[in-house]
Amino acid sequence: MADVRRSTVFFTEQHLSYADILPPLEVRARIEVAVLNFLKVLNSPTPAISILPMINRKASNRRVNHGLLTDDSWIFLSRSFCTRSLMRENTTKSFIRVWKVMEMCYEILVQEKRVTQRELFYKLLCVSPDYFPSQLQVNQTIQDVVALLRCSRFSLGIMASSRGAVAGRLLLQEPDQEIVDCTTCGSSGYAISGDLNLLEKLNMKTDAHYIFVIEKHAIFQRLAEDRVFNQIPCILITAKGYPDLATRFLLHRMSRAFPEIKILGLVDWNPAGLAILCTFKYGSIGMGLEAYRYTCNVKWLGLRKEDLDAIPEESFIPLKPKDMQIAKSLISSEILQDNYKEELAVMVESGRKAEIEALYFHGYDYLGKYLANKVVQVNYI
Image (cartoon, rainbow, N blue to C red; front, side):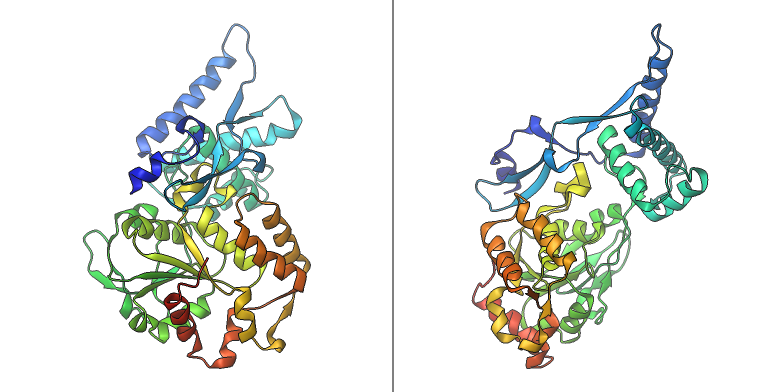
């Protein structure tokens, strides 16, 4: 099926830009070539400051792939280039940041270490405070390096920080380790590692029919404590809010390993909840050339407008300016399918939102019944 999907898309391979997963030696070689090319230009008969060509990561270069024989969709970047140069005032610092991050990544690879983006930020803050005053500059520059070298951030020695957890009918086995039965991990679940290499090597087995992607850790804990997976053959997974890279990667791996399993999202009925669902479903433009590696065909189970009658009037909360800002961004996006836009329009028009916890009005055991009714009725979009 994967081969069919690759051959039935509207874009051709030459228009797709992506980042390779490479061994450390090859990444180091690409950094060395970049340095040699830079020095070659400086030592030429007509010396000049070179530019750094990289894939343009702006929203204007974003495309959405839609499968022909599947309903999978995901964000990708087309082969359109931008540059970083010392000769333009607005990109001078960005140009220097790229070289400093490449230098740091080279050292990490030589030492055979891995660091988080946060650890990298503090290291760069100490050695180059004028260029990296905040985490934002580090995050953006990492994606610049990914776009320049065409390799994943993990290949650069940068690992994901994970806060996600998984529970339910899933057996996991790390290399040379004991099998972990995720039905026995309690209400907190099995902590997802930030080591993507380890997640890629996980041996997984399941008899589940559904994967529930839960926005909130508290809801995840309630469902795990109630052992909802004994009533519904399912796996529970949460990123405890906005999805981190490791949780998205594991979910993507499960979608590849178990393509017959339905993946269903349970999020708050508000613009932020929909944004979280869309990040799991389509990827994020912030991931640049790596976005497509962390997507899966998740369906929206709830909360949706049809569930509002089950929520007491006192539980609704007015939309805040931040909610309206997220809603505006989603509405203007080409990725949002029509029935999702309809849901969002109802939110905006009503000027209010609702949280999953509002369903506790019907009792603490109601969530399991709610999920069961939804899957029996195939009530998801």
